[in-house]
Amino acid sequence: MIDACSPESRSLLSIDDALDRIKAAVNPVNSTVKASLKNALGRVLAEAVYSPINIPHDRNAAMDGYAFASRDMAGGQAFMLVVTGTSWAGRPFEGQLQPGQCVRIFTGAVVPEQADSVIMQEHVQVQGQTIHFPADTRAQQNIRQIGEDVKQGACLIAEPKKLTAVDLGLLASAGIDEVIVKRQLKIAHFSTGDELTALGLPLQPGKIYDSNRTMLGGLLADPGYSVVDLGVIPDNKQLLENSFIEASLNYDVIITTGGASVGEADYVKEILQSCGEVNFWKIAIKPGKPLAFGKIGQCYFFGLPGNPVAVVVTFHQIVAPALRQLSGAPLSKPLRFTATCTSVLKKAPGRQEYQRGILSQDQRGEFFVASAGQQGSHILSSMSQSGCYIVLPEECNGVQAGDKVTVEPFSLFV
Image: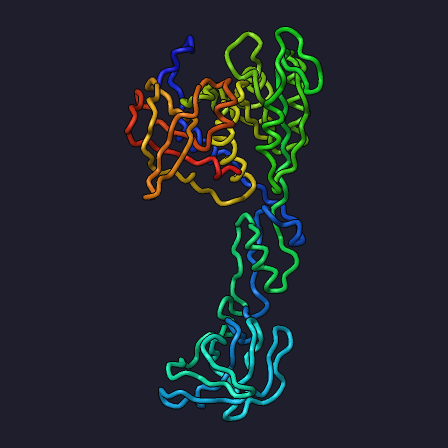
């Protein structure tokens, strides 16, 4: 791929090559902290957790009914047993189950030692204290066995894993109230540009409101990140360089928006070369070609474009995977699948393109996608209205209605 906008006409780096470079350059954090379960959601587990108990801890009923011993069954014939007590959830039956007896039992209640079967209450007839069992009663059913879910000493959750609500429930079921997790990433972000106006102030001629910092704040809303918004830095080379250097001393990652292009006031690449190192600058992606990645000291740096849609696309496709790797979370490729495109899509070969689409599914389960509208990198409204990316490879030169395309749902990033 040749960059037609570059005076050097140098080849652009493909997105796959850019991701490979980031993967080779980024070293996950090693520091860990202890977190209570209520503060562990979304954190990356640093040490495997083993169960101190069997789950379930006792044999218990899978449903409401009657617990009995299969020895009392009548060889395929209907039979009767006498209720001798009740086992409630949290209040087990304390007697001894004798031949000819059964126990009323509720879901989750401990099954008496002498019983090996539970029948659903809907399958029996009750006459006072006598329970009539049908001929098709099955033995050794509807009992959850000790350790059926997890055996004592077995691994509950292996590291590294980004802990979900279900993970926390599993840990709590074993009586575990705290875990060892990776420390939070310290991330600073700010916008660059003389044209930016803070929210709440009147808009002057030639100015625009700074939407990028608000978006980045939302995109970076993750329990594994400690994020600081450093505001807006004007297009002043020395001020920008000082800001970069100061932030690099206090944060793991710096993310900027704007100033990464080739204009006379776009200083990001030049400053990064001066005070740090540039791993790459410009990639074969649309929107978002002018993207810089490098380091200042031990701090990783991402210089994103200024156009808002390009910010979102490059964050999803480039920055988010890098942050997951840096946080120690396991890496995975985004879920993509094929859909029938119902719109005509314009595209020139040369860059992998991420167009905004509206995804739907018919009654047969077939997926369809339509263009969300204008695809300019400044058109944020179509990004807001869309639900997926339509991923068009570098060699693609357009799409006709009815063609199959690859889609990537936004729900992966929520």
